[in-house]
Amino acid sequence: MITLQCELELSKTDKELLLKLMRKFSSCMRYAYKRLLEGKVRKDLKKELQPIFNINSRYVDDAIMKAQSVINSYKELNKNPTKVIFGGRKLFNQLKSKHLTGKRYKELKREWKEKRLLLYSRGDKTKSGNLNIRLIKENDNWYLRINTDNRQWIKAKIIRKVKRGTDKWIDFIWRLTEAELTNNYFPYSVEIKQKNGKIYANISYEEIIPEIKYTKENGIVGLDINASPIHIALANVSIDGNLIRYKPISLHELIGKTKNQREYLLWQIAYKVINYAKENEKAIAIERLEGINKGYRGDGKPKLRKRFEHWSYKSLLTKIKILGQRNGMQVIEVNPAYTSIIGAYKYCPQYLIDKDIAGAYVIGRRGLGYKDDIPENYLKLLSNKEYLEYSIAKLEEKKEELKELLKNEKNIYKRKPIKQEVSKINKDIKLLKLNIQNLNSNPKTQKQVNQRKEPVRDEYFKYSYKLWRVVKAAFGIPILGKSFVRDFSPLKTLLTDWDRIPRRLVPVLGAGTMVSQIPPVGYMANLNWRTKSRPTKSVSFIHF
Image (cartoon, rainbow, N blue to C red; front, side, top):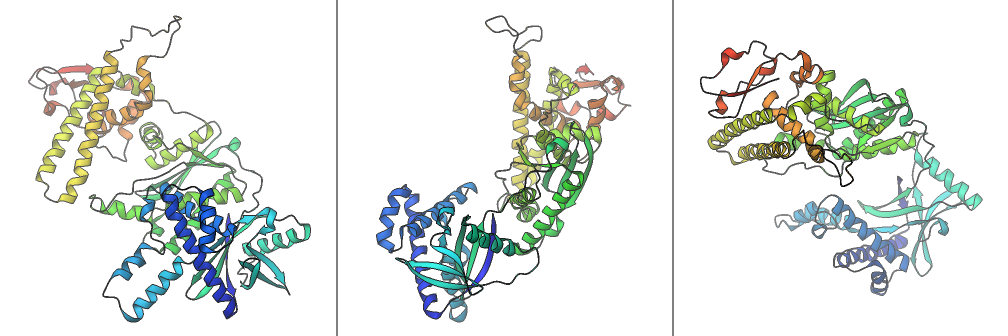
């Protein structure tokens, strides 16, 4: 969908007629909005609204459709549609302030009224492109012919300069001229608004999309957008699922910019992504993100929340999809579940790459249809009861440290992230205990069969969708020392070469075992740790 803006020039009489029609349409839309929230249907509203606002049935239908689109938009953003203020909440709150008087108050009131004014007419191919508001050509000039009432029309001259040779206005006028010659029309919607006393029209139409030239048959470029650090990670993945190369693109230039400046920069960044994929003649894989929690005021994470304000991930992904279609490039959306965890714990240790690049690599592999199973060496530890008990002990130790920190912290805002971390650890402990129960309830010597004596999957693997969460809980704090790290190299030996890991003793919970007797983080990489460091009290050990 392409939207083009142009200014309209009208006589004083025609302008008054148009503003009157815009007020009727806007009132009709707001009235329909309230009725839709009450549960009324479009068909009944159409009959009810036409005699009230004295506009034709198509305008009424468009007003109802516009109101419904606002409701749908707010629901997609997980916002309450009953809280909508037409004209803008910010302006409304400013106008409520009693200290505003005089010229400033009049300017704000005029701006608020202009934002509430609207006239919209949807496109229709069978109605020469648009029934109520149609573009016509007279004496080498283009006009908008606007239906005001009962087949009475006013004409508004279109004022628009072509800014460059690639201006989409040239393509639109060419298609419009061709449609009039061939009677093969295309639909275009028109929305008329007022700003600073001037009338503007926004014309939207569907562009012609070329055939797909770059597909995943040649490989794919996985894309992951990250807020901390704020950048894009690109992973060039071959058709057989191997990582060829990678490239980061910084988004720091978005910080501190206005909305319009960010919009311009986002288009430039989207072009960089598309050009990188075109150079490698590959498709693009992105995450199908529906909503991200950007925090709330007073959550104790002001710096991260500030980054999220400039992290326009949805807008950027939309621009990448649009440019991909225009360039004949296949853009594949994949399920984002566990991409970061898989990339961090599986591919970061293997390739010694950043976790964001690894996440982009997983997205690329999913776009090609590959699935990432848990490495065999990880499964060996996850199926070992004593190691899981050791992991639980380390998590309990970390939880006690956080509780002590929480006890000494007096700032109510800094206490919130500590409480959240404690809550996450409790969930990890619960998950590991559930994993131990699954091991105890299903001995390896017993094979599962169905009623026809056919072998079936082990009961343990019914929980395989949770196994990556178990990996994070069992290897995060117990081995890496933190729940959020960027260095996953301590897992490399464990992941890639199990046989070369020296046999060493690991204390686990047992009779007389204390959490403080557990060796420090990094013991797996410490080759000097031996049995001479055995605690004085009785402790159980495992060999691996």
